[in-house]
Length: 622
Image 1 (cartoon, rainbow, N blue to C red):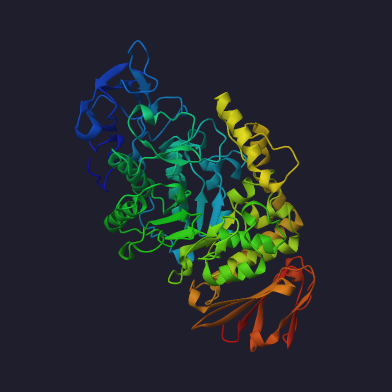
Image 2: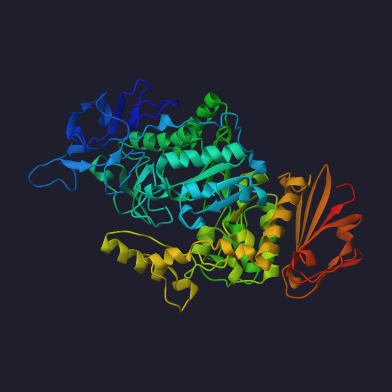
């Protein structure tokens, strides 16, 4: 089947005349019919080449429930009496009754978009706010996110990043257990509510990033093996057999994910996709699946005259992923760099357990400011091998940094947020360390006002074996962190409810102050002609190891900005020679931000910077 960037050619789609067209890849099937639930109508599909089945019919109405009846000798769950297997559409757009229900024939083209003038946000202008739909608001759905758009705009956010919404079991999940990549979670409001949210965001000037998972499927409700070889035993992943991107019969699997990517951009007007853990995508094809996705996204962009971004989570310091297609890279637009986070957290006193073990703190933080990757060819004690490659030609807008995100909060055993682990002054310093970087900043929901509620790992499976397996997995995961407390039960609804934001906290003075601080810091980053240019060539970072301090210098043709960061618990003197002929433009220790500095520090041969704070200075012409 050939991919058409203008329309979806997998699953059920409605043509302009109202006719339904269905394409299904099911090479294991000997016969396939479409069953319409309400009318009990059975429509036989026509067998096409390469394992595809096709049907065009005017007997399927919008919002009708349907499923496939598969006659399949190779299916794992084929009944002994040879009755057909009843399975939902692998490319279903809407599972109104969850993963175990039938598919709903939703018309992707029925939504009335009013964002046609929206041109998107450049990577240089991205200030990302990561949120989880179910815990961001009390009601936990797309409509309630809309009510917070003005709040996010006031903060200075330019893009929200929504954790995965692909249909998962139950109504409580981080989203990485999705089993229907095309279907929008029913408990969040389904596809129309997501389209409405995106349309409203664009009308108000906010971009939308969606987190998608192309490296595995969840364990419950996953029946893809009944249709065809979606998986391969060639590779092993933490979730079992890998998705089949390069083994026999992989072409249709690759097309399935390419179609998914195009759908989010074309039919939902998503601005960017954040691809989860792409290092777990196993593909030795001549053209890597990510590069092929990028090629099709470029075609769609040329057709629609809109720019679409592909951002990746990557646990490899390998710039092949973010190098251009023309340079034999995969063409991804930017990657998360966990190493900045790890070095930053160790600098603040985080214990060197688990993945923090490789980081020495302030010196590695300085290196990440300069080089993005901390390990770019050196020996990694944690990995017990040399690791990484230099990223010398990659610009700052190709890297995304943070002081916390869903993983590094939620993958703590108790899900403690940073606000409960460090002082108020250190919270402000962490924010500035991210927002003054030459990289794209990401804020995790609630961080901006010091949310104290944890963000814990939660699920709502129905299979008792899976539930117990997840519980055991969570307990064993924290062996390296030496916690003694009881691991929260991921299946418990209490675990989920504890993880919801407490918006009432914004009425309290310290939380109000922190929100105002974030707002001012983001405004400074946007308005300052040095800070808002993500040019790595003008970056210097010097670690003052004995003082646990760092001098970050950002410069371009507009001038220089100096960020004096004191991560210690004592006032520290910084050499004044670094900041000659400059002025203070921001002080996190000011009384305005709940600190103790009633006056700005004097700029002399030695500049005193208060404990756990940052002093930002700019050359006179900035």
